[in-house]
Image (cartoon, rainbow, N blue to C red):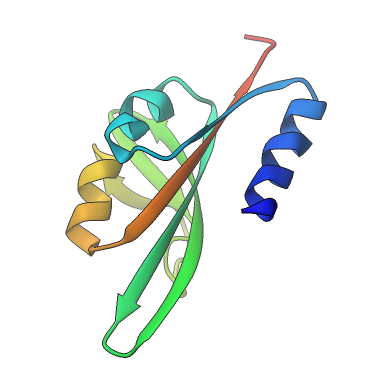
Length: 104
């Protein structure tokens, strides 16, 4: 949790508008209003589990993920809903940091 707060403080100190959300029901609306987001979530595959983060932006009616998969070489289309993406992939304990430049 301290790592997440450090990210929030880093951007706030540089005068960006930053929010930390824990309710996935609010992710889509908040992410659409932001310039960029960082999505954190837990994953499980048989007996392995871990945590991951993805940089996300909303463009042309879709969410695009950077660093989504270990073999990603370009932005990945996450669909039109982060909540749906998380549910379909069975990811859990998601948090979203939204970042908006105060200049616009």
